[in-house]
Amino acid sequence: MSIWTLLCLVMWHMFRFVDADCISSPCQNNGTCVPASFRCDCPLEYSGKFCDIECRPRESTNSYEGFTTGFLSGAGAMLFLFASVCGTVCLTRKYEEHRQLRRLEKRQRTVQILSTGNI
Image 1 (tube, helix red, strand yellow):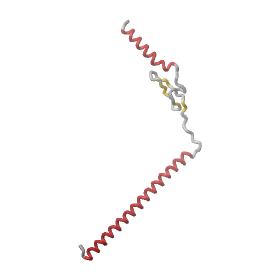
Image 2 (tube, one colour):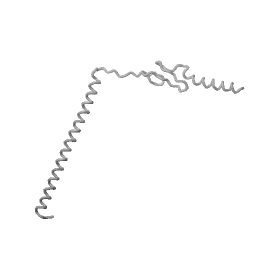
Image 3 (cartoon, one colour):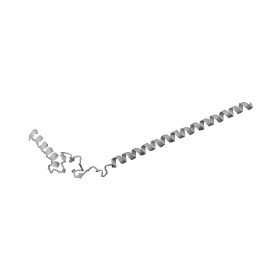
Image 4 (cartoon, rainbow, N blue to C red):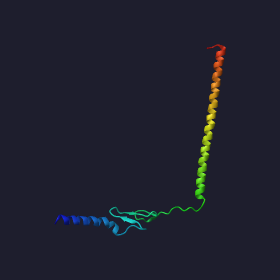
C-alpha cells in the first residue's frame, strides 16, 4: 500500500465522519448544519439544538405601553433626583446655621472671658 493510498483512505474516513452529522439534515426552520460540530446555525426567529424553538418578539397590545412605562420611570427618577437635591440643600443650610451659631457662642464666651479678666 502506497503512502498516497493510505492518505486517501484517511481523508475519506475523515470527511465521511465530518459530514455524517449533516447528511440527515437535522436542522429545522431554515437552520444551517455546521459539519464536524453537530450544531445548527439558526435564523434569528429560532433557537435550540435543531432550530426547533420559536422565539417571537413580545408584541405590545397597548400602543401607549412603551410611552407610559418609560415616562413613568423617567418621572420617578426625576422625582427622586429632585428630592435628593432638596434634602441635600436643606441639610447643608441646617449645618451652616449650626456652625454659625457655634461660632457666635464661642465668640460670646471669648468676649465674656476677656471682659471679666479671667485669662
